[in-house]
Length: 211
Image 1 (cartoon, rainbow, N blue to C red):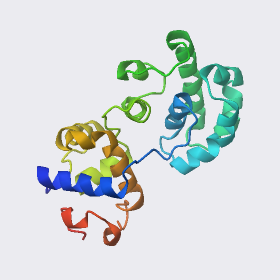
Image 2 (image 1 turned 90 degrees about the vertical axis):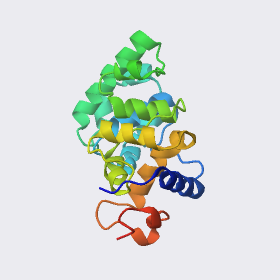
Image 3 (image 1 turned 90 degrees about the horizontal axis):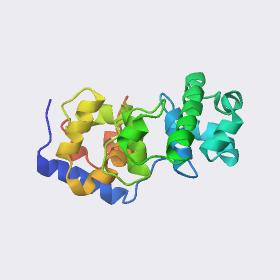
C-alpha cells in the first residue's frame, strides 16, 4: 500500500479546503440535542434518509424532555423508515433519560460523558465533539474507512486505526474540518464503485494516480 508523504498530505488538505472552506454536516438539526438524535439514527442510513425521517419530528421535539414526553412508540412512528429503527428509538429514549437525570437536559461536552449515553459510541461522540463543540477529532464512518487507505492517508483497516492514522498524519490546522472534507469526498467523488477520478481535485496526488 502506497502512503502519501507528509508534504503530499498537506497539499491534499489544502486543495480540499480551498474547494470547501466551511464544510458542515449534511444531517439537519435545530440544536445540539437534535443533532445527537440525527447521528444516532444515521448508522447504516444516508443523511438524506435521516433528514426525511426527522423533518417533522424535530418540528415537534427539540429537547430530551419533549422526547420523553413523546415516548418510544410515537418516536417509532416518525423514524420507522430508518434502518434498525426499533433499536435506535429505544436507545434514543434511554439516552434522553440519562440526559435529563445526569446532565440537566444538556448534551455533555466530553467524550466519556457522551459515550455513557445508551446508543452512543466513539464515532457518534466524535461527531458531536466536532460539529457542536468544535473539537479537532476524527469521526470515522464507512466513507473515511474506504477513502483514507485508498488515498494513501492511512494503512489501517479498522475505524480506530484509521482515526489514529489521520489524527497523527493530517496537519493540525486542518484537523477540525478534515473529516468533513474526506466524508464529502468519499460520498460524492471517491465513491465505492467507479470513483469519479476525472472529477477529483486531488487525483494527481492519489497513489492510484486517478486510475
